[in-house]
Amino acid sequence: MRNNCILRTKLIAFQPFKTTLMFAFLAGFIFFFFAIFLVIAILYLVNLQNTLKAASPENRKMPPANVWLLLIPLFNIYWMFVVVKRISETIAAEYQSKGQALSNAKPTYNVGMAMAVLSVISSLISIVTSPNRMKETEMAMQGVVVESQSSGLQMVSGLISLVVLVLWIVHWVQTAGYKNKMKMLPNNKGNDSQIFQGM
Image (tube, rainbow, N blue to C red; front, side, top):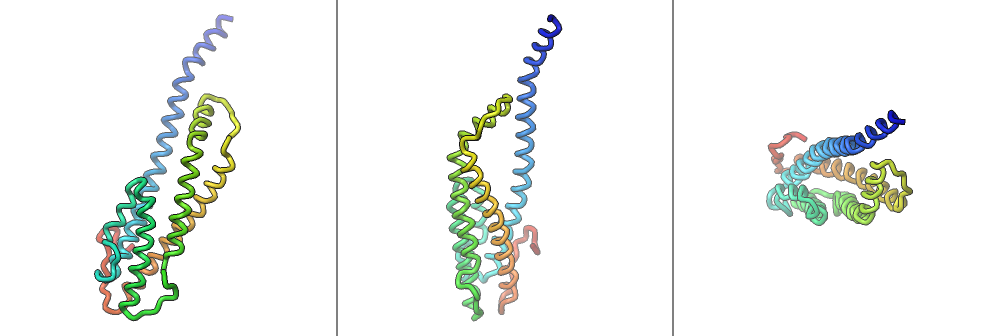
């Protein structure tokens, strides 16, 4: 009996340490993936900047450096719409000024806008479901299994996020493609950013 009491006491004392260890592991996991995401995001922004720089200065609808405002949390939700529109207008203006035909009157616009709109929807769903998710995570840390109250919305948000990821990649490829094509237009010397030059 005494041994059982001692064992129970040790298990109770170990519980806070176990919880702290799990939180530390979770924090490290989140930080690792955030660092990877940040590097990829920077490469994407360099591509957008270079796409604007590939156009003649008089055809740029926004300063190339302004794409870095997308790194500002919350503000980037609005700014993404601006960047998508301005890049599309820049490409169209560059082609028009060089007398070159475009197969799409608004290049990269539809994919970029779809990505921006779906990102907002996914963010709103995440905000709505976050209190329940935090509560469920806290209870799971304590070893309590509870039925998710917002699993349907979370599944929808996950699917939308997957679509956003695909659109993001497509938008990246499209803008990179037009960047390279604009460099080949008449009287265009090309103006790549000095950061990650050649990407």
